[in-house]
Image (tube, rainbow, N blue to C red):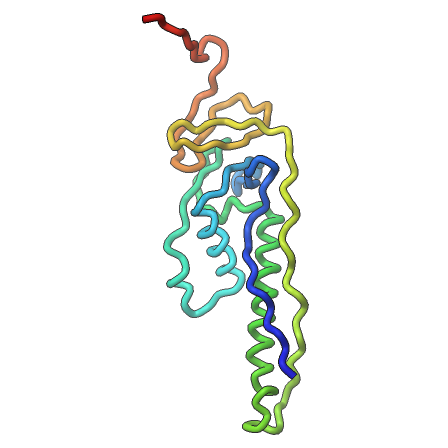
Length: 188
């Protein structure tokens, strides 16, 4: 009796209605959101490798980018900015895949009984893999442009202190009162 292998599934972080993904600073625990990019896959793969290591891991990860907290400026590898819910989901996915791999390794003996007619164990079929995470809820966060890198970050509405670019770490001082930029049209 042959069991069908689980379907290949993609693992992605949930987004809100305008395409931002939740992050959380490992230092100050403040939430913020960024737009996902190509480096997100490296952060997710790096976190999965921590839960489910395999022999050729060096072939999979080219390097995890270093990101920063827009509030406190703390810099760390990108996978450190995953929320506890995201980390829990990735751990469940990694454990699920590990159970399926282990099952396939043990079930190989049952499929080749002609070679070994007296196995000393019975492979128990694993549970189904976890589904995708729930979509990210929309919150009252304001979008702030990071002019240094051309990125955007969503931060809490009432934050009135300096912000740091999550990508390059550049400091952006708050603009209020007389510091605001005034644009004028100049007739030529």
